[in-house]
Image (cartoon, rainbow, N blue to C red; front, side, top):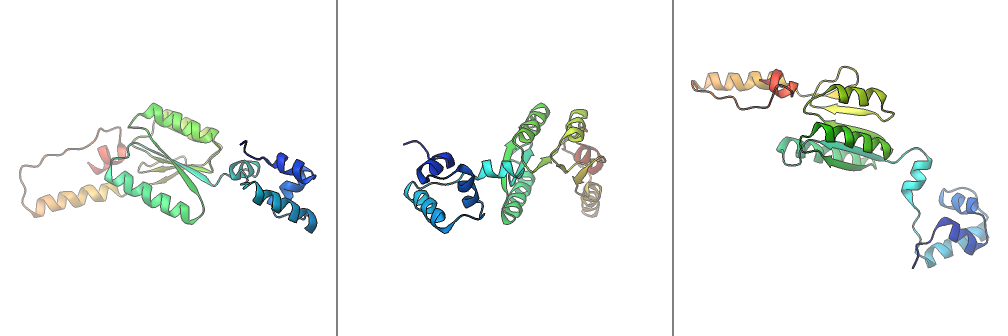
Length: 195
C-alpha cells in the first residue's frame, strides 16, 4: 500500500493541505476538522515527515561527524561522548569514517553541507588548504577537533603537556633505550607538538 501523504489526508478529509499542515504544526484548526484529521491519521497510521518539516524551518537537528577512523580508542570514545551529548539536546548524528583519506574528508564535508546539517564536527588529523577553503565558504558551522584552526572554532588537547608528562615518566623511571613511535608531521598536534 502506498504511503499516505499530507495531500492525501487533505483530500480524504475534504480540507486544504494548509489546514492539515496547521494541524500537525499545532496551529488553529476548528475542533470538528481537527477530529476528522485525527481519525484519518490514526486509521492510516500516518507519521509526518519530520525531516521535510525541519528543512522548511531551516533546521534538521542533525550534526555530522567526520572522523579518520572508527577503530581508534581515542576517536571512538570522543564520538560516543559527542553523540550522547547531542542526543540529550535532541540532535541526531551522522558519523562518516574517512579511513584517513583527506580527499574523502573534503567530499564528506561537502555532502554534509548538501544534506543541510546544522553543524559539522571534524576529528582532524591535519588541516590542509582544502580544509581551510571549504570551512571559509561553508554556510554550516564546522568545529575542528584535535587540531588548532586559527580562522575558526577548534577544540584541542594540550599535546605539549602530554608529551612533557611522558618525558618526565621516562626520565623518573631511569629508562635509557627509548623508541618514539608516532604519526607523521602532517598531524601537527601529535606529530609535531606532542612529539
